[in-house]
Amino acid sequence: MDKEGENNLSKTVVPTPSQRVVLADENQEILEKVVLSEMTWDENTVMGNVSDKHTGKPIEGACIKVCDQAYNPIAYNFSDVDGNFSIEGSFSPSIRIIATKKGYETISSDALLSESLNKKALNLELIPAPNYGLVIFGSVKDPQQQPIPAVRVTIYRAQSLNPYDFTFTNQEG
Image (cartoon, rainbow, N blue to C red):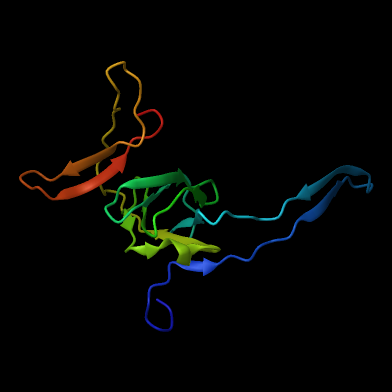
């Protein structure tokens, strides 16, 4: 919570200019000259970092989804070894962010105005839950046995019509 008592999921990202780096050996002989490009982002990019809420360590392989108000998928990606992620897409004006990883509780944001996330990075903190959840796996294929990506798979509790959790198929169905 910030000083006004509101949850603040994002921070401003400062663009970085390109930098020139020279790699040299111990005798100062130049081995390589590298130009690091400046950090740019598209207006339709959501980026940020996923970390463990208790340890602060980055979480690799967390699935971050951008959904519309009805939780229909728009785009998704996975966090890298440093917990960073970037998702590009054509987002609706109001979106929800969902982050999940086995061994952690799934988090889901309230509705966010997509334009308010421009040039900001989300800091997503997952709470460890080592005995949390069950892993169900499989694939969705068409009649020709070709994988079908982006299919919503919903899990319901026994004797209930309320969804318990959901996910979306990847490129392999």
